[in-house]
Length: 160
Image (cartoon, rainbow, N blue to C red; front, side):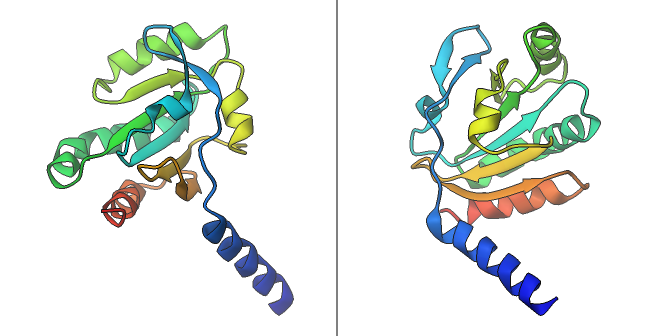
């Protein structure tokens, strides 16, 4: 048991030290234009949240972030990127949902072929990343519990 815990700790420390970068993967933006996810790297830290229309915890997390976003923006320059993993059959529903939820201040992108999802090793949604202004992934978590959005904000603030 101690060996397993040590191995898990070593893997977690190793991940943090290697600072992975955002991959160069194409997605569609809200207007349907194909862009690279790396095009969003502009010196501003960001929260990248993978979600789908059928994932209630995903929507809860994005709504919780949205409720606090204006307050957060008073403290830190940042952005939120909502990555829909809905496929070509349901992407129109995802586009409508982003507008209906009032996620107007989010950068909404659509990963219809799930290329970005695979490149970032996302297996379950919600899966959320904190990315620094240079495109380095500094934190990652999956699942949602109420209040965990505050932890994301603390990670963003630590990047100042």
